[in-house]
Length: 465
Image 1 (tube, one colour):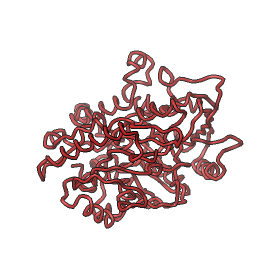
Image 2 (spheres, one colour; image 1 turned 90 degrees about the horizontal axis):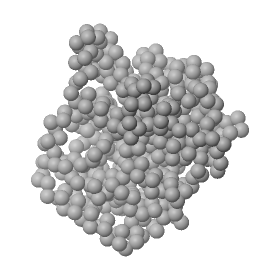
Image 3 (cartoon, one colour; image 1 turned 90 degrees about the vertical axis):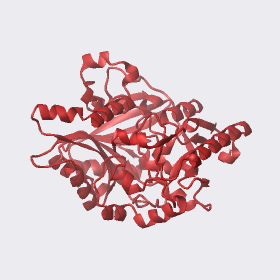
Image 4 (spheres, rainbow, N blue to C red; image 1 turned 45 degrees about the horizontal axis):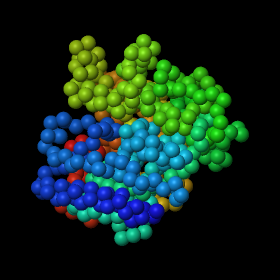
């Protein structure tokens, strides 16, 4: 199989029919009427006024929420753009294969990870999800269906689509590379007492492929404070003397403090963070053993928690509670930022002093190859650490929403880093354009959505329209 063109005839015909239906539905929407994708889940944290959804026409993209074909011989798959990574892994793991990078939450879609970026513990070796995409079939803003690869006539779109957040078009099908897996992952946790030694260890692991004699097929970590940090190395294994289960009463992130090593089934390792949404499910009482026993296992999922947060944000329930109790309002501080590894200790020191939120996820990342991606300023060959922090912080007297987030944005820029755009952003338009290559974006927008049928990136990411 060589991609969409090499699909078995029946699968190709079914896919082409679905593409034609969607293209016709998009063309039927009157000019000037906003459109949205009718997706059951979202992993964005830019909450909009729910009334705005009624002003948009929803496109049915359910036909693109499936794995079209897996080819174990070439270790590739053709996947609908709206397919969740949960479904994608369910389709590939029986062949002993998985995507090169699987973002940590089950309902992140492949198309979402490509247009909005994604990361996980293989990113130090395999970069970001879009780097293992060999071709993208896209419905562009101007209504065309195009196939973009790194060396065809739409290579500008291939390199410019990542970090465009659906403002240039939508993914219909993606051809991706897969990698072989083993049944288990052998996990080892290493503690560090200061951020600098932790960052130095990341540099060593990225260079040597392991640490203290232990191989690292996976690498991430957690900072509980600036004096208690853990790096977790995972290595594929054919055997396991025991396996742990963190989908029940045990909580994965707490195990970093309790165990020096562990074994998980490969599928459980892939989704180790999803059951408790890292540690954020604690806000719903799931650290309490009694509550946890009563909370049905099937609802211990990141998408369930995200819907609860969306409900709270849209209704202002928590904000009203703080007002009734005469407590300070809290700012929603949910971000992922990439910092050059040599400045990682500086960022942790700043964050601990100014924002005071813990824990913080740490995920080393570097681009897989030598390509530069138009709208996201990572430099080939450079090693970064993604710091993820998700929660709220009490606003000081006289400060309003954006106080902490803007402070983080300024510090990230000062340290030569950058941040993902899945959550709130407060940049001025001029600063945003300078940080995310506004000149190149304008060219792409003119080429693939000249009529402006889709929102612009600044409107979507910052103005939250």
